[in-house]
Length: 273
Picture 1 (cartoon, one colour):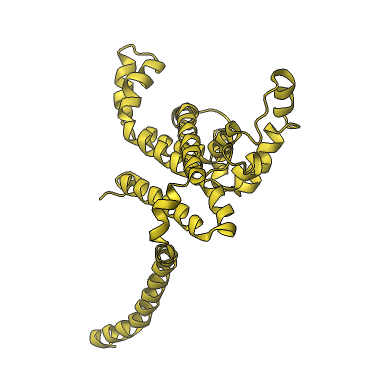
Picture 2 (cartoon, one colour; picture 1 turned 180 degrees about the horizontal axis):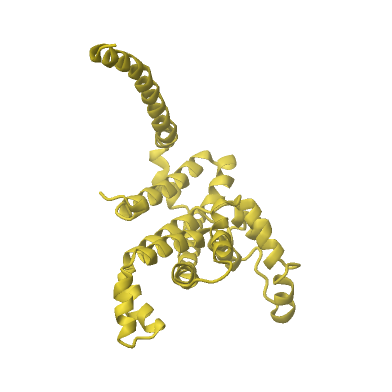
């Protein structure tokens, strides 16, 4: 077989493969973009301003912003030490702990809500003694929403910040340690300043995830207007009552998500501009 004949056969074989790849590529792009295009096409633009000016919807937006920001702050406080532990300390059971930390990322949100009820509900493992000793209950309260969305969004910060710790130049930390700095001083004066981009990215991702949480929130905290009804829950409710309002609220969440992803384009999965 001559080289020319082999080349021709290879090209004949490559053409259908290339065609299949092109079809799969087009189908994948269509699957991702068509729902977004459909949402934009169905948006009642003339009603956007009146709907966003509705007091009930504005209260829902305010509550969602409050809950998501509180969750992001809580994720930052709880997640950074956990990420440092996973990145810098070796101990038995480390792999298991890491798996448990990221479990909410793959756990069905409704199952997460049921687990939260089992732990913090009025008859829960912690909830029952908490109510008995302090009178405080978490389910169906704004604080309960914060706990629910933090349970789901915290792993996003932990994973991002742990990757940031692992990406730091360990020689700089070692140099500070050899100069007499304690582990806490190295973390506070050396590691954290270098970790700012990862902290910002992790916090933003956790905030965006908290803003869009539905399953764990409605299961653990319910759907009470002005107390636990966040934007995703309002979308579900309005879809049956006023589809135009549901579309407008969905558009708000879509805009926030796009803004987050565009803002983090240099940090998301390590991909640059």
